[in-house]
Amino acid sequence: MADYDLILEGGTVATASDTFDADVGIRGGRIAALGTKLGSAARTIDARGMLVLPGGVDAHCHIEQESSTLLMTADDYYSGSVSAAFGGTTTFVPFAAQHKGQSLRDVVRVAHERAGPKSVIDYAFHLIVSDPSEQVMGQELPALIMDGYTSFKVYMTYEKLKIDDAQMLDVLTLAREYGAMTMVHAENNDVINWISERLLSRGYTAPKYHAISHNPIAESEASRRAIDLARLIDAPLLIVHVSTPEAAASILEARNRGLKVYGETCPQYLFLTADDLDKEGMEGAKFCCSPPPRDKAAQEAIWLGLKNGTFQVFSSDHAPYRFDETGKLNAGPNPTFKKIANGVPGLEVRLPLLFSEGVGTGRLTLNEFVALTSTNAAKLYGLHPRKGTIAVGADADIAVWDPTWKRTITHSLLHDNVDYTPYEGREVTGWPRLVLSRGRVLVEGETLHAERGSGKFLDRVPVPPKDPAATLNTPLDPAANFGARLL
Ligand code: DUC
Ligand code: ZN
Ligand code: ZN
Image (cartoon, rainbow, N blue to C red; front, side, top):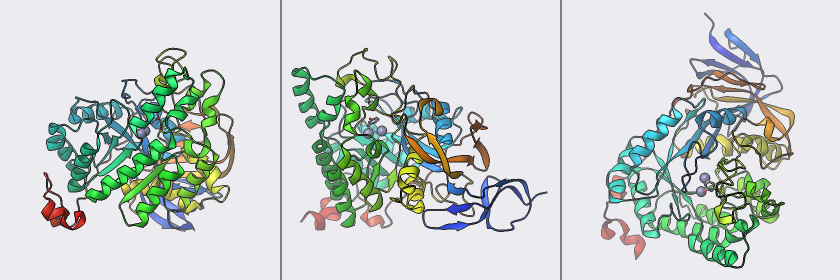
């Protein structure tokens, strides 16, 4: 019998901290050895000239999920996970989304029913909490966190999803007590609505007004407020899909003060601008997402944030809607900017875009790239060290990158179920040639080997604060918990 099931031979391994030449021995789905002359293997793959990186962890994507207006995404767990795999992502964390009035337990059950038979990559779920009712806050959410659903997203905008500041404080308090991570969509709903109404009443309806209505101040104000609410509770907070220099600066300032504040950004804020929404006719609808792409100066600030510790996580926020009546144009062929389905696809191109424009140009080191696209998300969401690194004992989730592979991104190259890509025609250098999930070959060249439903759900454990005396009670006891800070 061979020593290993598979050896990747002669490649350069990179983790979030180190880069070194080593063969990787894989046994039983895990990394069993790193070194040279490892022994025999049932299969050996020549990785000379290749970069052997941890598979990507995409911690923000919308898969087989109904939007707040009950519009279903174009990707289900099969097409979504296949698309992820072809782009070098081996774990994703889509959302189990609650709509007002729904039981969170039901929402989680449905997410499992959707993902289990279809996903080809391993997955976990973030919850979306839109209705923090007594039942949800008193029973369902604490129980779900303890069951391992240790992260959830809340919204400060979107009429049907948003929670108010008092609800946010309740949610943060509960997250702190039970050891969960709160993710927040930070945009000021009233600011957006106020501008939108003025635009619409003057007949300004084209897609480009989406970007104008989502003014950067709506994002920076809400981001500051969310940080302050988290500061009051001393709860961890991750601000998702950050697009503006000001919001980025607030996150960095909070981090420098030692707050447990984290930031995420996405490809659309590095590679698209508001000008893309101003394309001919309804074409601009393809680029409508919230927050919207900004300007060149904002792109530069977001690049800087990837480098200077503002952002820990680079996710796709893949929100796939086709450019037809099932998606972007579900409200008719000529909708106002308010009625265009929000979101852009990006699951498959997330890593190649950042690799090419980040590592390829020298803006990011290879190790920073690995940290931003894989390791940090695995750590923040309780998946590390099983996921997000190349180390003995870790799952053998590996993307073997050809750093010289030049490709032109075009819709027909991609495997999602969307009928366009916002990055059409963009040339990139570097793409994975081989993708492994728990040692199984998922993708080799342009061929998919994975079986439907072969991805596994990933258990996580909550991490409550170490000092139980510091744990907040509900309702809050100001004398015990807040005295020092409130005075
Ligand atoms: N914005 C979100 O908040 N979610 C999905 C898509 C989008 O554009
Ligand atoms: Zn969002
Ligand atoms: Zn999103």
